[in-house]
Image (cartoon, rainbow, N blue to C red):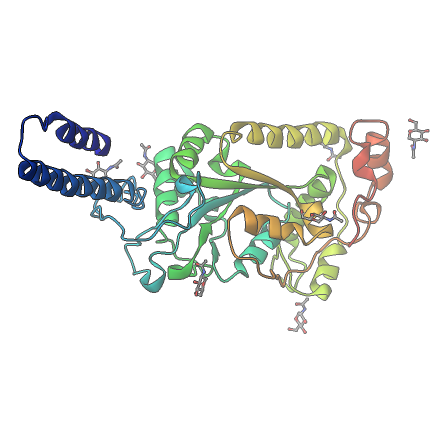
Amino acid sequence: MAEDFCVFGKDQIIIKPPKKSLVATRMVLLLFATVFGIYIFSMCLKQIGTPISSDYVDHNYSQVPLVRWPCHTSFIPPGEDSYVHFPKPLTYSRNECSCHPVRFFAILSTQRSGSGWFETLLNSHINVSSNGEIFSAKERRSNATAIIETLDKVYNLDWYSSASKNECSAAVGFKWMLNQGLVEHHKEIVEYFNRRGVSAIFLFRKNHLRRLVSVLANSFDRSAKLLNGTHKSHVHSPTEAEVLATYKPKVNTTVLLQDLKDLEERTTNALDYFKSTRHIILYYEDLVSNRTKLMDILDFLRLPQRKLESRQVKIHTKPLSAQVDNWDDVYKTLNGTHYEIFLGSDYHI
Ligand SMILES: *[C@@H]1O[C@H](CO)[C@@H](O)[C@H](O)[C@H]1NC(C)=O
Ligand SMILES: *[C@@H]1O[C@H](CO)[C@@H](O)[C@H](O)[C@H]1NC(C)=O
Ligand SMILES: *[C@@H]1O[C@H](CO)[C@@H](O)[C@H](O)[C@H]1NC(C)=O
Ligand SMILES: *[C@@H]1O[C@H](CO)[C@@H](O)[C@H](O)[C@H]1NC(C)=O
Ligand SMILES: *[C@@H]1O[C@H](CO)[C@@H](O)[C@H](O)[C@H]1NC(C)=O
Ligand SMILES: *[C@@H]1O[C@H](CO)[C@@H](O)[C@H](O)[C@H]1NC(C)=O
Ligand SMILES: *[C@@H]1O[C@H](CO)[C@@H](O)[C@H](O)[C@H]1NC(C)=O
């Protein structure tokens, strides 16, 4: 529309032929043309300068009136406007931060891959709100509609959790396990991520065998409750970690190869489904051995760099051979296969 208007203005100026007119008339005309030209030019500038759709009307946030945000958007890097948002929460006002851009993210991971630890690190940043495993509640993922409604609430900064930083959040998200409706409803979710500019942070473990051992130990503790009768998936002291690590699970070697194959396939498929979204792939082992990698995440979310901290303590620090009850069987099963790399210690604490 802006362009049409400009062309129309140009025509106006050219159409009038100054033929046979007096000098005065010419002067008046010239003056008129100049003034009109400047006016049109300023109109065009105004049109071009309108902030990019900074207000998003959510799926069922349609009750929220559409208001043009008077925020200066000049600091948004080119090509990134679809990843920058100015949410308007229904439950409170963003006050002095209402013109600070917010980025949407989701940590896509699998159980026992260090995502709890990773999330506490992210949440130690003053401008990050990562709201936990919100889709562990079944009713929120019972169908695509329920999922989208939950996502809308989180990304409109209306989700309340202990991690919410509210008005000055510059990145908002949560963690989502592949088996929590994410793979099942991947079509709708990928569409949503692309439409609303949600960035995906994949966090996987390279060593699926270690993950399997951690899953076994954690599910044993769910019933055994080694720590004074309470089940803990994550601990905050070396003593607690030691208690939990005393349990050595027995791995079912009959199904081990198939289990490892399934785990590998599930992560490969997830990466394939979400390849069209803006994403980054992280491995727990890399984060543990190189903390500088965390700064890559802050860059990815365009957040100011800060030191990130977590109080969580790693439970299994010993070599795998000391963590598994039937290590010899496990070794024999995997020796000479594609998975024998998991037998070695691939990182140190
Ligand atoms: C959202 O709410 C409005 C009115 O409250 C309703 O008309 C509309 O159908 C709802 N949209 C969806 C997708 O549920
Ligand atoms: C981060 O949060 C602080 C304190 O709430 C605020 O002053 C600052 O402007 C925020 N930074 C960004 C990039 O939003
Ligand atoms: C989706 O799930 C929600 C919550 O479980 C339920 O209330 C709703 O009726 C379901 N909608 C459809 C279309 O199945
Ligand atoms: C278990 O409880 C006892 C006494 O209440 C306490 O001294 C001890 O530290 C607890 N141990 C753990 C691992 O929480
Ligand atoms: C291993 O798993 C298979 C299949 O689930 C099961 O039939 C078998 O009894 C298990 N073996 C042991 C030792 O638990
Ligand atoms: C650690 O990670 C940073 C950021 O990704 C990278 O530049 C650096 O080379 C890594 N260091 C090592 C020793 O791998
Ligand atoms: C592993 O396999 C190699 C040959 O593939 C064999 O020489 C070695 O003894 C095996 N190791 C164990 C501990 O079984």
